[in-house]
Length: 273
Picture 1 (cartoon, rainbow, N blue to C red):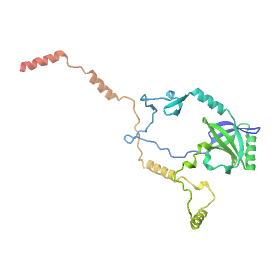
Picture 2 (picture 1 turned 90 degrees about the horizontal axis):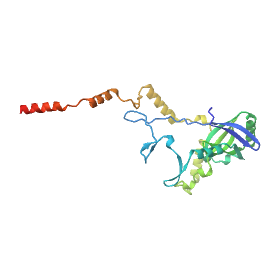
Picture 3 (picture 1 turned 30 degrees about the horizontal axis):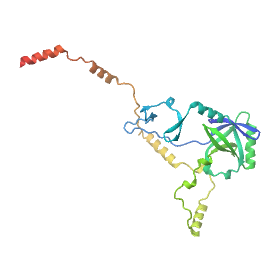
Picture 4 (picture 1 turned 120 degrees about the horizontal axis):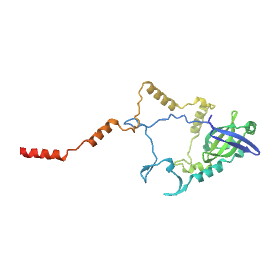
């Protein structure tokens, strides 16, 4: 399993070397965009609208737009220094809370934690302590140049870390339009809705749920492949066509009529006249 981060978790005087591994993956079917006319893959280029030219990564600098069309340039050295200052810190567990106190709206991504060299016993200690206390650890971590709030909790026989959003990253419910304040609901309506909920209530078993759209899309793709209905793209060819180049060269080097030839033709025309 690929390691996305190495560091340590500390709580009190206990320090645990750990490795971070992505616990989830995107299983979406990746589709490419082709030019309808020739079936060539579409590519996107970075261009400068002012200079009207394509730019490379070396030509790009990072900036913050503090007012319309006004920017503060942040050079690579400044960004790298700031990044190293933050990444050098261990993941300190700030405090411990109950999992049910955190609303799911705050959750972002999940990562498995594995112990690093010499960290097995401390890892097991934290795992067992959290399980016995029925608490989770609340911590901060720097991942890919962004500081994240995170929780650490037992998951089966491992520790799992889940990044969560900071409060200012969660939009206010006051921004949601057309939310009804109060609506008169009859007892019969509420009882009927409650009965329906009870009838559809089951123990959550994640294995029962599948992505039906993704399955159907893959079946359609496999059917087309089996029926050999695929198309072959025409890759861009930067090699100049040899025959065309030869023909153009012949045209350019073809000798023009000399002056003496033109004079003879004029004399012949006058004699006929």
